[in-house]
Image (tube, rainbow, N blue to C red; front, side):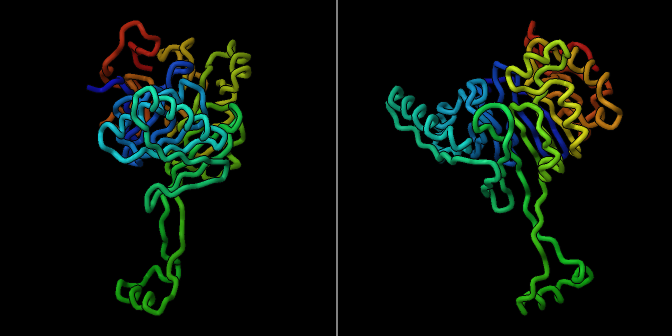
Length: 314
């Protein structure tokens, strides 16, 4: 049985599963890419994912790391690979060693320290790249990029046999290109991420907007989080096709958040944005396009009394 009732979104051929409530837990996984951004309390649904990308060490984002690593061993899986800011690696090692002593079993792990600009190949055609964010010491965001080779224009009209002949002559007929698939900001204040090309052009942006009400701006600044004004400014500087909003404060329920988004977003952005924790989100598994300003179908399973249980469409 699954340990969490995770939200689910389908974007083209990619699934996004997760749970993100500010101060409670944040975990966002994309199984087809074999990555999990932050780990929250390590829901069972993400244990089989091989790559965990930790943006920072706050407990609501990282508390499940020892369980994730230990449970993989219990299930006979190879050690999980954890990418984290360089300054976090020693504390993570200390945590999993301590849990190993409590449990009576050594917890295997592959811990990889990252700094802004570092990249790592996680699959033959997939690379993760880190960039700096503005939240706490060493905090990072991550982008997953697909690497391809593209045929040079001068050879575009050739048939297969002609291309093979050129390759036999050791003539370079293609060049490398990279396609940014998804960028995850984690917790952060506004920064001009538009200056980072792979962030600005990433197909999917997963971004926090913790505080949507203008009355909470001071709280946002104190905690180095994003508020609506900064969120809108950031989106205007980016060119993402899809935007998934995470880390909403419990002070603002889903119905109210949807109302604010509909009010604040222009028509161009309105068709791109969806709230991860909207249990009626129009990015349901069977749909292909976000429609944040259109009514959606039946709600998914709800937890009664929680502020994120939307009972009416936007």
